[in-house]
Length: 336
Image (cartoon, rainbow, N blue to C red; front, side):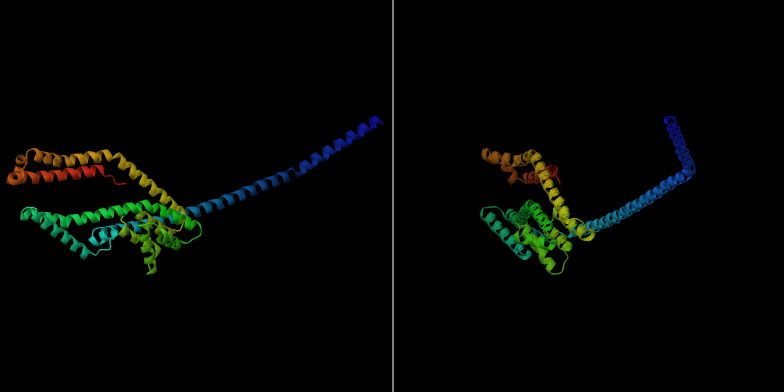
């Protein structure tokens, strides 16, 4: 019985193996064909996916190229306009008075200059100087002193603007991130900013009210504040209005750049302070020596002022001193 069972099991196993082998032999070609078909389908799908990705990548590159070209064209136009504007700005007395924050008209400025010159003429004439010396002093005071005062006020106002401008940009960034539009952010600075930034942004808001666009109004600020930082700001606003983009991020980057420029400028001033002190000492040394000689031997030094040859020597010395001062000034001044 046991042997019969073994034979039956063996026969059954052989029958199963034979059936399986026969089925595999019959279905092998079909299985291989299905595998090849699936592999071909997967390759086709992968190729279609790669083509779609490649097409999407090409579309993105074309879009970026168009946007880059648009930004480059905008930058070229802005640079051209800025060069034309720079030629017209900061050369007239009216522009200088506006940059200094003075409410004087050009006529009043020249009237005050003439009054100062007349006062200097009378003062030097009463002090015993000759007519030519009094006229020279009056001309120097009338033509030089008021312009120097205006230049000093312009420089001080520009420095104050540079100190406050990055803080105002940070306020604009926070305002835009909170959901305010650009015009409202400008009005916020015009209402709550610090001088002189507040007055300049108020002019931007007033220019918008008379019909100018925001980029045009921001570009006009360069007339009153002729700084590269203001030029950067107007370019950022103009590019954002034409090409789009994240304005808050752009203004934040601009604020960071302005702070870094300010740090670099302070570092350069600190490094060049020794050269400036040396230039001041060298420039003042001839006058100090002449004054000391006058105190010890007045008859020895006064020959320069009474003799015509002394006048020639003083004139030539003044020219060479002026050239030396200008050379030293150019050596210690750095444009950042």
